[in-house]
Amino acid sequence: MTRVPPCQRASVPWCCTAALLCVLAACNSTPPKNHIVTLAVLSSPNSLDPRVGSDETSQRAHQLIYDNLLALDEQLRVTGGLASSWQQRDPLTYDVVLRQGVLFHDGHELTAEDVVFTFSSFIDPSFISARKGAYRVLDKVTALDRYTARFSLKEPFGSFPIQLVMPVVPKGSTAALREHPVGTGPYKFVSFAVDDRLELDAFPQYFRGAPANAGVVLKVVPDEIMRALELRKGTVDLVVNDLSPDVVHQLATDKTMTIAESPGTDYAYVGFNMRDPVLKDRRVRHAIGYAIDRQAIVDHLRRGLASPAVGILPPASWAFEPNVFQFTHDILKAKALLDEAGYPDPDGEGPAPRLRLTLKVSTNEFIRLQAAVIQQDLKQVGIELDVRSYEFATLYADVLKGNFQLFTLQWVGVSDPDMLRRVFHSKQMPPSGFNRGYYQNPDVDRLIDAASAAETEAERRRLFGEAQRVVAEDAPYISLWNKTNVAVSRTGIEGVTLTPSAEFTFLRAVTKR
Image 1 (cartoon, one colour):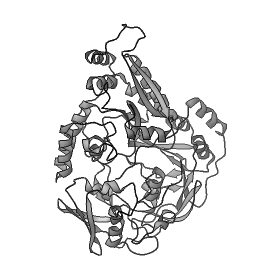
Image 2 (cartoon, rainbow, N blue to C red):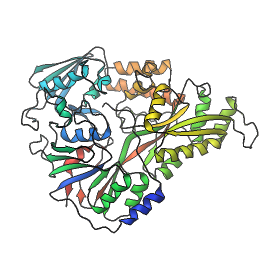
Image 3 (cartoon, rainbow, N blue to C red):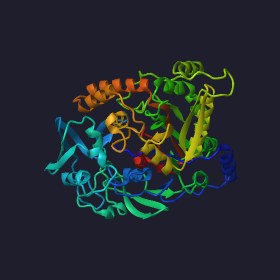
Image 4 (cartoon, rainbow, N blue to C red):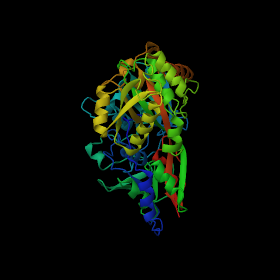
C-alpha cells in the first residue's frame, strides 16, 4: 500500500488533560439519532479522489467510499478485494480478475475499464499525484475482457501486487471526484463541508452486504481535549488513534467509555546522518542505542500503548524477521563502546561530556517529552544532546536536505516489505526515495534487489529477512516503538474491531444502541 511520509500528532501534558476532562465528567449523554455513527477526526480530507489524497483523513474516507482492487489480510499479505483472483503470468505480467456484479454508487457495474483508467492515471505524465512513485515499474494496463485487467511491468518487481491495494475509481473521473466522490464502497457520499464534516450514507447495494448502521459522519475536531469532551457529551461516538496515551488513560476510567486495542504498524525511530564524521562510526550509533531506555518510554510516556520496535517492518507482517540484533538498555556497554570509538570520559564522573550531538524533533508535545527522556538517557553515558524543536514543515525540510545529525520521526502504517528498499537502499537517497540518512551497504542493496526480483514468497521472505538482520547490526535507525492502535467509543457502540493498519473498513459492522 502506498504510504506517505510520517505524520506527527499533537498531545498535551497529563496534568492539563486530567483537569479539562474532569470539567465535563458528569455531562449527560445525548447520542446522535438515526443510527448514524459519528467519528471525530483531526482534520478535513484534502481530496476525496483516492489517486490524489494522501493525508491520513483522506485515506480513512477513501476506505469508506471506495474498495481496493486487492486487499491486505491480518498478516499484511495481499489477498482479494474487488478482485476475485489474481495471477502472475510471468515476471512482468499480472492478470487480475474482477468480481462480477459490483456496483458503483451511481448504479453502473465495475469493469476492467475502470481498473485500466484508475491505474493508467499513475503513468500519465500529465496526472499529478504523490502516489506515482509506487508505479515506477508499471508499463501499461489493458483490459483483456469485461472483468480481466492485465498489468505489464518494465522490469520484475516482486512487491508489485501490494501496489494494487488501491481504490478503483470510475472510468472518466475528473477533478470533480475530489469533492464529489463515486465509489463501490459500503458508504456513498452525501455532503462535505471543509473543516466541519463529511457525511456518508450506507450503500444498500454494497457487494459484501449493506452496513449495519445508517451512515457515518467524520466530524472535524482539531483539538484533542475537545475530541475527548465531545465523546463525553455524546456529540461523537468514536475516536480511532486520535487521542494521546494520557487522554486514553483518563477516559479508560469512565464507565460510559469502551476501549478497543490492537497491535499497530506505526513505527517511531531515531535516524542518523551517516555522513556525519561522528555518527558514521557504528560503535557510536550502538552506544546511543544501548543508552536509550526504550521500555521506559513505552511504559511511562506511551502508558503501555506501544511495544518496543524490532525494526521498520511490524511484527504483523509476513516478511517480519524477529531474529535480529536488538538493543537492550545497557549503560556500561554504551560507555565501553564510546571508549573504544575514541571518546573517553574527559573527567571521570565529572560534568564534562565525551561528545556533543544535536537532535532535531517536531514541536509536538509528546515528541518533545520523548526527546527530553532520550537527552537524559544519553547524558548518563557522557553524550550531551542538544534538542532542537521545529514546526513539522521546517523539520521535514531539514531531514530531506540532510541538514541534521539525529532526528526523530514516525512512519505511519508500514505494511509493505518493499519499505526496506525505499528506506535503506543506496539508490533511494533523496530526492529519489526515503533513505534520508544516506545509509550505504552493498550487501543490503544486493539482498533487497534480489528480494524484489524473487518469484516466490518464500524466497522473498528469506532475502528480506537477511536484509533486516544486516540493517539491524548497522543501526542506521534506532527503533523506538510500534504504536498500539486504540479506539475509544461510547457505551452502546458495538462491533469496533481494529486491524494492524487501523483501517476504517470495520465501521460497516458497527451498531448503535
